[in-house]
Image (tube, rainbow over all chains, first blue to last red; front, side, top):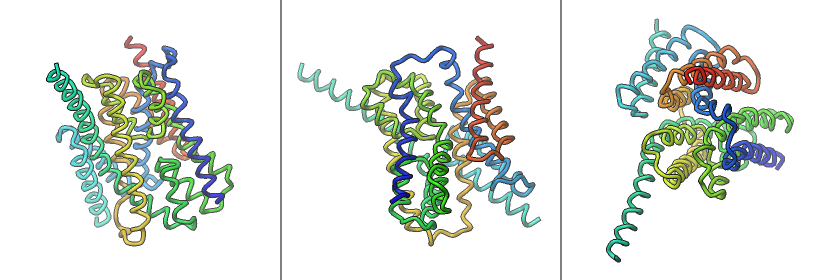
Length: 107
Length: 242
């Protein structure tokens, strides 16, 4: 029961963070803050993704980092070539990640 | 007149259907991309000592994979309630930024829908919504609301089902499946459509670089440091370009 209550508190806190700006959206944000907003997505998503490519499983190593970065580049190229087709880019990147990891392990 | 009115209703219905169809077309590939992550998370939840139903309840209560994973794993190791709550809320602090980022597009929505929309706000919902709303065919405020709710409800339903399935299949999934590789590639694919200007590239490059350098910090603080640095650089460069 304590676990459920803890999860409920986390849920309430997370909801409050999601809602605080969305629900008060009618109040116009100050111009300097508004100028920053378009860069929230690029900055946050890159901050989530890049460490996972540079240090997969929380450590930098040739056998771990090189296949991950290669997969990221291939995913990017596949996304552009396949006209933003997400599954093709995702599974193309995954295949390269797996193959490069396998090749480096076998070498 | 009746014919015209009927035509009007038909056009409105078609417009609604078109927005929902577009939302489904955008959301379903993300569901496919998230499927391995959701299954893996469910399997991890099932492997803890927490009663299965309570562990799964983190999906509807928290609705955010990274925070769910952290919270349930910390609870499983017997960490104090304060540490678990603080850790999960820090991981989810980016939701504040997402809410602020979406606010200019949601101001015209009735407040009850903004309250519901807040619950559905997660990384891919934010990414899909902002990419759509910034585009030339974002439509009216009502179209944006329909699109947002459709994307959010599709991803919410999928997340509940995937984490439940992962819990049920926990012991069956082969451990050799590279499930941990799906999440960063998915985030990369959500990021790419946002790279539409030099300040956006600079924000992403700075955010990623600082997050890598600060990745040793506890409780995902490196993520927040990277996000803050990236946003600041993007805003600074945009200001210089005028």
